[in-house]
Each structure stands twice: as structure tokens, then as C-alpha cells.
Length: 175
Image (cartoon, rainbow, N blue to C red; front, side):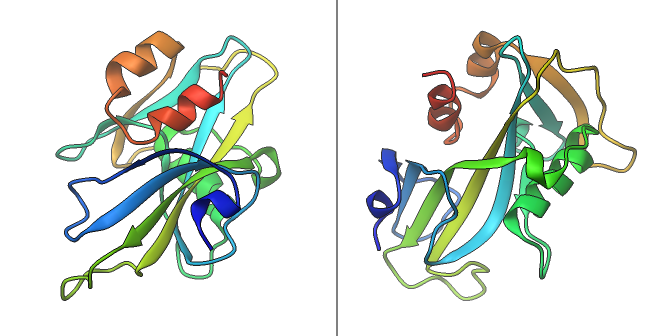
């Protein structure tokens, strides 16, 4: 199955953090992929003013990001997205408030190097939520890898994160 079989491919690219020949598709889709393995889940949360909740991840090369991360063993993608949102921003949403809207489909085109932790076909799933009012101030809980969470207008998200692979999906939320 190809990415286009399940949604609309927005872009196809490669990224420096995958050490072998690969293809990364950014796909708009309203359901989880049927093939491959979902390795991580993210939450793009917008408030009624069109602001996006971002987190600042205190790790080298990270900085401002959408909340998200790897699934724990046995965890569903939507539960992982809700958990990561709470861990990285302090905002708690029920999984039922999050809807699949996109994913990155990552396909390795060469054998992975020894110790590479991901399958040859993997997905990073994006969930969205739109709050009915203004997003209230929030802060990552103590001990989080995130040091700050902020509701940012679209222009500021572009300024801080325009180089991120998920930006094409963020822009699609406003189309």
C-alpha cells in the first residue's frame, strides 16, 4: 500500500536523522494507516483564536515542537498522543478529543544499520484537536523534558518551526 492509497500526499522528502536511503511522505488522512508500524504520535492543538500549543523540548537540536513522542509498549497511538500532550505541556485532553488528521510515512529504501530501532515501514501519526475557547496558560509538569509550553499565533509558529517536517501538516489545518 502506498501513502496515496490512504490520503493526500502533501510532500515527499528525506531527513538527516534517518541514516539510510529512505522516503518520508507527509500525508493528510482521517484514519490510522493499515500497514507498517506506528512508532510515535503527536497532538496539534488549536484554540478558538487559531493559536497552536507548542512545547519547548530541552534537548540538543530540538527546541520548539508540537507535543508528541514514542508509543509505550501496548499503548494505542491516540492514548500516546494524549499522554505526550500532558507530559510536555500540562494540557490534559481525553483521547476522544483527538482526531487523526495526518501522518508521516517513513519507508527505508536500504537495509537499516545494525541497531536501528525502527521497522522498514513506520508511521508518525498526527492528531488534531480544536478547543472551543481560548487556550489557557499551561506549563509542562516538573521532570518533563520540556521546559515551556505556549499558545502561539500561526505567524509565530512559522517563525519558530518553519523548517520542521510537520509544518506542511500544520498549514493544512488552516487551508
